Image 1 (cartoon, rainbow, N blue to C red):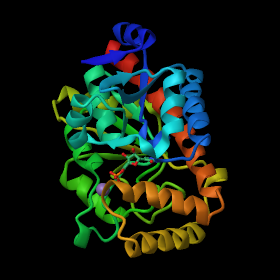
Image 2: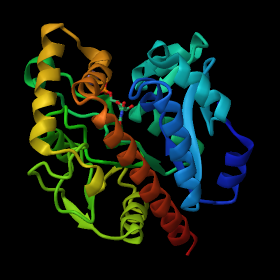
Image 3: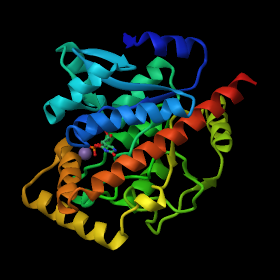
Length: 304
Ligand code: PSU
Ligand code: MN
């Protein structure tokens, strides 16, 4: 059902550490050519840390893990004309043999099918601001509740309602672990004023929690919150003002559903003259490195 690259097939057979990577961030999260450059740099960061990258997407209706460079370039060039695919979209895109860029939710599903436990992204989806009216809650949160994959992210995107996102994760039984921090990071910034559930300071410590969770058959994922490196973080008041402008414009233009997140990310990039994109790229690289360390520690512990 799922097509693995030969390298990835071997890595999984031989219990080598692997890190899953999503493709919506390539097609809908960043403009071309930065999207392709970033996707390739993220893969290299995983390799440099000693793990195998597995970028995931749907191509011509086939679930694929371990995209080759030409496939990443193909998706990156097509950008937002590729369909953004979450759990609900998967059967239709596969049956009609289309291309699909996988969100965190869809990437988790395919990673699990492939036997990959650790996944790195920028920021997971969450409860949108105004969700009390719109009911816009990312399917990523439901997926974290049910699918056994750990997601390393810089918290949830600051465009969201972060307190409600954390409440939702609590209700769904998803542990939120801060890597070397007590504070839940807010994507472009290290601070949100909100606490994570647990602080753990080492990849080994995080790996042992994952192993324990799944040995106990407590199904579902874990959200590992890794703050953006200080030098790349944006000033909180400046970014918040831009987010508010972007959210107001989206409401005025009635942008909703799966178009909302890509619209907000692009608008914020425009309003910050590209500096939010720089932060976004750096935080993804940082998450890829941590995910590779956790994947290595997890495979070692599991072997014992
Ligand atoms: N992280 C980023 N950029 C992105 C995303 C995450 O740094 O573009 C994508 C992920 O694919 C995530 C999606 O699953 O945004 C959330 O979309 P929505 O809010 O429509 O569920
Ligand atoms: Mn949504």
